[in-house]
Length: 564
Image (cartoon, rainbow, N blue to C red; front, side, top):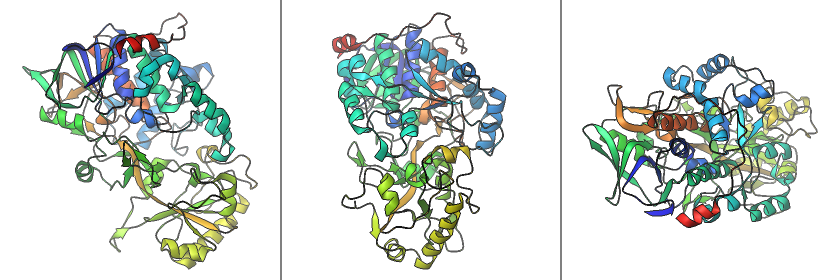
């Protein structure tokens, strides 16, 4: 165990196992109440899955929307989330997320110095369902100068390897070929971070200001109990860290433990982009003392490609977004046919990759491939690849569609017919087969400068043609430890286990099988972390914002240097 900030001790008021946004929010909330806190991170880097995420939060009926004059309500959001979740969510968790989400948001802004950009036009994912809005429920972190704020601690924070740009800028600039790369390079040199790394860095800055201890290389192994109450954590090394008031489990999901994933998830998971340290440690720790397990069939599903990227030395998947949503791209299945609206949200599209062909005893839509032509490649590129560069191994290239079909093992006639049919639709700006380009969400991720009538649709006409395989991936699992609406871990008889709390992908998620909008992972996760911190501190779950304007947080580099 290595202390990267704060003071080593045998006992703290609150012991938090994990360092993602849910863990850090729980710790920061307790620390702001005057509790001594330690954050225990298994890997050598702080931030967990949150640090490599987009960092967005989906928070219904939030104060930013009210200030902007957007009409929303918890009732409308509840109706929408229940429809998205297909009735699978637990009402106490859903109520907690909806009723306390904006309080959490105001708390981390007022008390922790976290700064957000309000995305007033970012649509909910399912515009066809009751209660959906075409903007107003998503926020994202502002750019944050980690070098100035965290000093040497910056080196201990996980990064996704991307340039420091916000998702608001991504939407404005469109494809990566249009990004101001020189400006982004300068931001990076100046110490700015964005997205999930910015979010966890701001929360870490709050913890450092509060004097919390941060330790890496500290894998939790067992919970220490006394008379049925959880009183500490035993590390893998045998060292025991004791907790006066509570232990919070927030160790991430179990997606990197193949045996667990295969036995629990409803569908086969082929790749993921989370840190390899997510192996279900919190789930096992809870199970050893009789903790209840729920919701383990689901994950934060997403269509991904295997491009050779790695994280902590392990191969990871790459999320496909514009590559399948930009005009001039389609996705075909093993039969060379389109099978879905390629521009829909990643969670629902990934579910189409899970379909099974019972008659043939094989997957229905996989192997799947994104197909683009050379004109698309010149306009947008594919991931980091640009036209004129040597074709990477993850792309198949051919002069004609017939040759491409042979390379990816689909019927050539089907592929040619599919492209011809799609081209006719694209020229008219409509997709009667799958409705691509009809919703506000589809249009949001299209190209406003598209030469054709619909920003989501464009024909494929110019060879060579390219194909990239798509597999069923996930950001992480989202089921496991069962909690109540105050983040207290429940035993198998639905009774709270005294002294034990949990948040994040370690737990059953408030939205169950649903994915209502951008930030639907971190919104409820941070809310449950906030509730854990408030409950441990003996505070009312409802936060009442201060009427005083909160000053910007001062740099904490000297504090970090002193504690490192």
